[in-house]
Length: 414
Image (cartoon, rainbow, N blue to C red):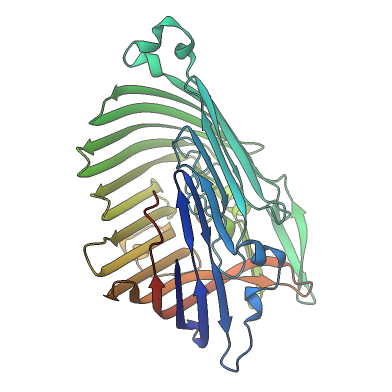
């Protein structure tokens, strides 16, 4: 059970914040609630907190059963970093990059040993992203199932599409400050096929080689080859690493649906009378090769670090993802942070938040057993609405929030 009071600076303007965030876990079932109310300096409730139906739904941050890669996994609510398969189509997708327009989605996976599926639905409040992957381990149906390496060969197929009305816009104009689309292409739909060869499966380490191919319907396609390595050091240290080489055709972007997709899909810049869209970037994409790397570590469950980076050769399209958490019952300190950044070409592009960044960080000290003083910083996005109150994009939003939180463990949930 947690809650807190704080002063919240949103784009430089002070707001008084009240928050309750209880989480309940019984065996594999977990529920997380998030009630946040921001008051302006003159005592009014900030309108962006409760101006659409999805804001009320988002008070249920998530309801879940199991964890990703369990035989059965279900999560309803915020989808922070959803991935299908090896991620060549959908990788680290975040359905709620804005605290002012939080969405309720669904992730639903099941593994029946011989076959299984993964699925993602981005937003129950309106049209949006929907997709899934089915996979088969064909030799599990035969007497070859127990043979090392070949017994666990896996083949899969993925289909993801975006039904949002803005997903196909490639040109338009402003009429009396209202944007009117003048050209729409078919909404992006990506199909993918993958083949995995597990070379090693043991209690200590795993090693898998894989090949993926993806095609964006009416656009281009690309392939990738890679290797996955996992190490489980006797419960003390867990490591996960992946390296991948990519071969991209014209009009193809690997991992098209990524962590920043909800921002990149379509965004208006009303002050400049311009717009950006991911489909326009897809039309400009040139053939070439690229690479992708991922590394994650977990030390005693106290320190968890994850990082990944992808980039096409000679292009300014690098994508960085970093995440870290330090939290322990034996230490009074808390630290957690996340950083997603797109459009990276040179070293200086790694640093600094802009319209293609998502940042959060919290550092805190437990001055009493159940009381935490912390400072929370986030660079997220706020929705840009037209005169009809429709969301037509996002613009950066900075929040700085000193907090005093009360966190009480009701039981020893898993």
